[in-house]
Image 1 (cartoon, rainbow over the protein chains, first blue to last red):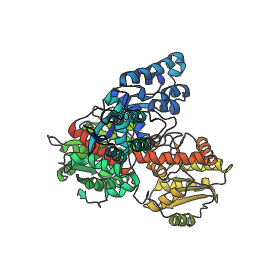
Image 2: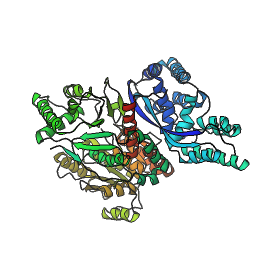
Image 3: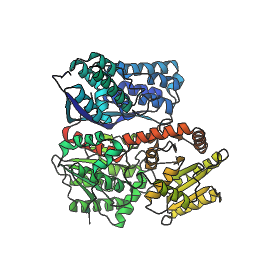
Image 4: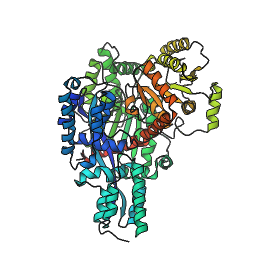
Length: 219
Length: 413
């Protein structure tokens, strides 16, 4: 069995939600907010919400889309925003740009909807992150599997979802280490293709563990 | 006299069975750099009310993580609590005639408590407006003071808020239960949800025989749908509106309605509302209006567990933790989109939101017609509570806050 030179260090994360001073009561105000809010705010309402609502696998992919659906009844625009996949982005700037483009185009096409009041306001918030090492590491696939089994939801989210931004690559911590640490590129690719939108965190973890088991049987 | 409260220790590992060992390991990892460091929680009452109930469970859990945590209760005479009750109502937007005497009483008791309370911990957490002026005791140095506001400040009485803001603005941070409840402040404001304890008598698993006994005691039929609202008899909880919604549902489904809340005997307004409710019920044999004792957690637990659908048709609400209690028990919930309820009920995902009697009735009928959807909402609701509204999550938020204060704010990007 392969042994990695650099071990995988398991870490967990906790977020505080900081309430911002911006809010939106119309689509036009949402657009202004999207243009001006911090990167930490875009992260909070897209990446972080995926972690805190991971058990929802149908139609809930970010806070902006959910607000458009539930509080403005703009199903068409909500659908467009809900279809955004954070795995396609290696930076918040690119994600923000697409969010602004979609909302901006809609406001331009339907100016009478842009100023209509929503049922409830949208409050822009930010994530403040604290990480903590779990004191567990892995050099082999067996040790890695054991570490993944013991991770909390937040730890799994940190390595599997939010890591995409940290790495500035279209991959995650697990795949990155499996490929670069153990040289298991096929396994790394399969892990990177687990759909985080149609699986819960527990479901994604189960799939990852199954893939590891298949690899262990193969070797 | 102000007092330091001793609380019973709860083994943190007892939560592992419900939450998973990984979640407990995570709490220990987050707490590690805070071991032995001092924390003081300060509020104005040792028993009764949501804050005391939360601190009663939170403090021993923090002790389990080797934090040096103490819970202090400030003291005050009747005149002080009359003033703070007026302030509380005024901050909620009720009419209030500002009187200089009230502000003087507030300041005088704050000064007395500053002299008696040992406010020297590294992290001082002040709960609600009553002890807010204790910030005057802050010594120059490295300790951190934060203000946890459990009330809705979205439409406060201007005079009372202006007075309070002079104190609040000197804290290092403020925490609110909903972004909607916060104010424009120069200090950082964080979102801190109230929480339920899954191991408390109100939320723990129950022997089905006990639940059956409770149903028998109140002559409820487990074979027919039971709709339940648990709340005190208060117009803001709209119990009369609940009966009207039930009557619409009753045209289509042979169901029963339970309205259960604390006794109205020591609350003159509650007694009036109870009479209105009984009048509206009009001796309907399928409506049970139940006056529970002031502390009846097991009965509440059993009634929620026996319900087919739980309703929370409030006209105004703080956070409305009865919603989380029901969701934790995997119950489909139909609730009003007010206060903190939409944070708990994500419409069509973790429950159904409504804005009227007719809307409430419609959502109940829909869920009674589609039990598979009702069950799914209940499952999702349970997960939502597990992820966001349990006492262990609250503890995690505090650990994160203390570390952020001590280590400096760290952005994710």
